[in-house]
Image (cartoon, rainbow, N blue to C red; front, top):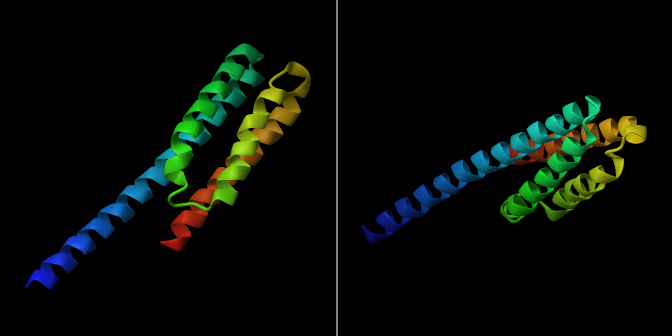
Length: 122
C-alpha cells in the first residue's frame, strides 16, 4: 500500500512538472515574441528611443527567465537566442532599420524553434 501511494505521488509530481514546463516555455516564448514585435513597431515608427528601451526590457525579461528555461531546453539554443537579443541594440538606429528587422525576425524564428523542439519532445 505504501508503494502504491508513493507511486501515485511521484506520478502526480511528474504530471505537475510537465504542465508547469508546458506553460512556462509557451508563456516565455510568446511574451518574448510580443516584445520583439513591439520593438519592431517602435523602430519602424521612427521612435528609436522607445525601441531601445524595449530592447532593454526584453534583455531583463530574458535574463530573469533564462535559468528556468535552461531546466527544459538545451543551453545551446538559449545561448543563440541570448546572443541575438544582446545584439539588437546595435541595430536600433535609423540607418540600420532593415538589419534590425532582419535580426528581430531571426530571433523570433529562434524562439519558435525552441518552442517547437520543446513541444515535439512531449
